[in-house]
Image (cartoon, rainbow, N blue to C red):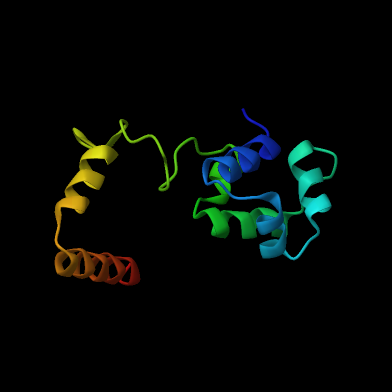
Length: 114
């Protein structure tokens, strides 16, 4: 199981975000955030919750209880059935602007009705 500090570092680097930007979002100093990533300081639960929101992942993913998350960058992995995330992204990119907008509205509608 990967350590939380490594998970948050990898997420930050994968998204090309500087430590300072994450620290500002959390309302802590860059040094404090750096210490979280280095394992020099314990990461409070409120930080875990805020980081999950920031990266749009579950707290289970951050804590290693769930190896997959909705924001997975593994585009070749199976998303549903034989469809990969690459297939989904490719299909989205072929839609015209109006259809993309309508699709996003529909997704929001589905999320709001859960």
